[in-house]
Image (cartoon, rainbow, N blue to C red; front, side, top):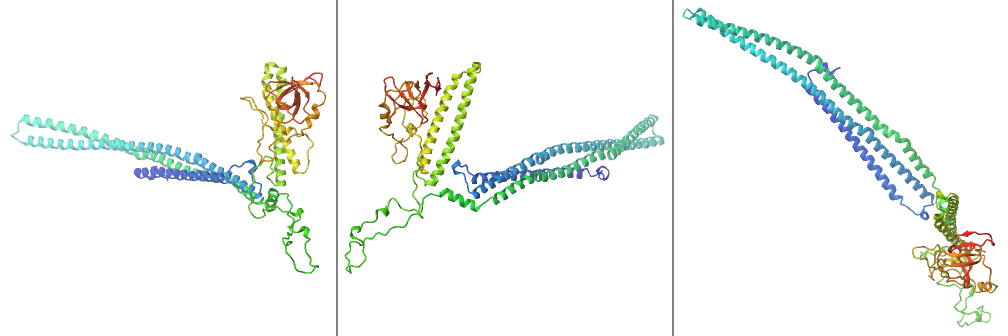
Length: 547
């Protein structure tokens, strides 16, 4: 069926139908817009939900229980699922809603053009009909006037009283009217023929073509709706495999929950390492009571009356058991002595591992800087070797600090494990208060003198340790050094030095972080190796500079 032939007289209805089609297209576009808004809101709410139940934690607060790890995995999968909902919304907005809006605008413009063409054709046909109708009316009017002139001429011609001039005048009027009627007839015939020709073109050529264009437009609109329906479904279908993987990940996370592993983690987290308390001894307070009985009565010897066994004496304030009550929170100490032995050992081992990693990074950085310095020395045009010296000094200072921290924590770990380190304890005394120049930070830290905290003050050396060494003959200088920082030498055996002061080296660092030096006045003592720039003499182990 064709609109042009079957609906040749339904212009107004086709106008209404095409308008309804565009309205329906826009209604569907609005539906898609609301759907993608729902998807966007849903995805946003899912992400907010994941963010709410997955807060940022520090490394120490990371969950270790399988149930917590599985829940975190589910949150991650849910976050990915929310991302797929965002993809659905984006694809719908681009491939469906955006396409529909562009097509709707093109459709409106095309429909307007076709209807304007139809109205122009109809207006032209109406104009032809008016011209024909006017020529027809004129022809009819001229014929009546000619008939009146004919009647007037016949009456005067038959009247014997009429003059010849009157008859001639009526005759000439008759000829004039007949001529005008003939011209009106010809014009009417021409207009009628033109109207019939234009009317045939209108209903057999113009209108069928315009209506066919409208039919094609409406059919294309229907096809476009079908394509967008399919695209609407395809957008959802494309994300189904990824969504399925997200759901499979959630199922896998649920299967990874291990109650035995969680129980073992509880033991590892809270095991104290203490042994259960022994039996309480019986304390007899009836020794001073006079007894009336036979000599064979069994009693407690008098010399032990009222005196509990010192081996089993119990302090009611010190050894109180916290089996079921809430134990008061102990202050956090640097050496972690507030923790039970097992937990303290684990924490110290973890801290040592982290410090070793940081030390390795600093060593790698030092090696890289030294290589770069060598390259600059061989190729001065590439850079100034002296510009790397401050960075190298800073790196070495950081290494000394890390080594000191590692040694300190290893000592605490050995204490927990019941061992005693063989290394010298001098390095811990480097953590005393010192004075750094304004604008420059000293490479070593300091400890507080709080008496309520353990291991905060550096261990004091044997008061006779340095006396024995200084009673010998003065040692020869093997090099010299320049003080990079001020050092107050508050510990026994150490030496006060000022920044930029030049000292003589009489004993190298033996690995404990201290170098023995002598002032020009003869005063000797130890200073931190990281505080000085050392240059050894050629006659002793070569001219090597340590920073």
